Amino acid sequence: MVWLFLSVLLVVVVYLAIQFPAFRKALRVGLALLFIVIVAGAGWLYYTKLEDDKRTELSRHLIRPDEIVFTDAVLGQTYGSWQVKGNVTNRSAYELEGFAKDQGARLSCISDHCTTVGENEVSTYLSVPPNQMRAFEEFVHLRDMPQPKKWAWSYTVQELRGKVK
Image 1 (cartoon, rainbow, N blue to C red):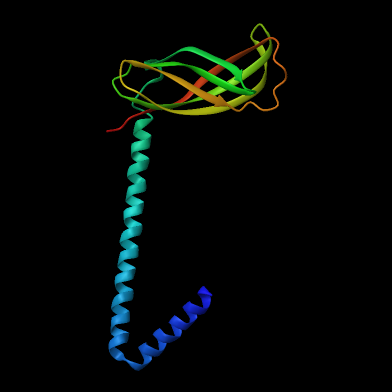
Image 2: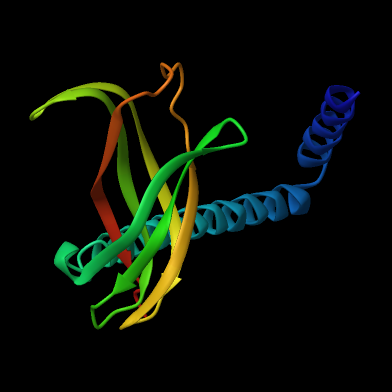
């Protein structure tokens, strides 16, 4: 149905362009203005994306890992799903906007050698002002885990995001 409408519209525009020179001129001006608007819009979108990328990259370097302290972090099962929760303290001069941690569950540890049975990266968006503490709680997707008997878990902070003003 839409194609039929567009086909009829195209035939009408071509007919008017052939019959009336003033319509041809208006059509050229209209197409030129449309082209200018499209180019300006694409340029604005490109500039906005570059600025957003710069802000994102800057936010990743505002807070050093030694300025963030995780306490009472535990990994456990809640209603059949794995969940990590704890507290995060921001000791930096910038507001913490979020962090990404790589969670790993390891079973059968013999001294320093453990068999890894599950890993997942968890991103948390959490606002923690400077020199304050907040609680966090996130679900971790650890699929096909064997029944835990003797196990340990660890995490690695992959990314910290500070708030760029």
